[in-house]
Image (cartoon, rainbow, N blue to C red; front, top):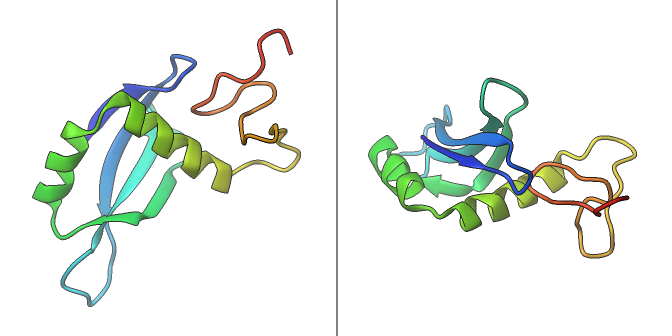
Length: 103
């Protein structure tokens, strides 16, 4: 588990969960959630063979990389009516993005 802040200073946690599957490899996947609770944003394409590897990898990830992953995951979970510009940034702020100043 690793704590980080999004570009607006809100605290988040990066962690890994184990998928209940008969596979022997790639059972652990990346999950991001607001510190203190909130919706989990899953990144099932980021996988590890075991918990130890997941924890070690998360601890070495930079804030830049975690924020990038947060932006990717949050785009998949946009609420209805979410406003993004042509570059995928929030028009009025949102998870992992600064949004438009004074917008």
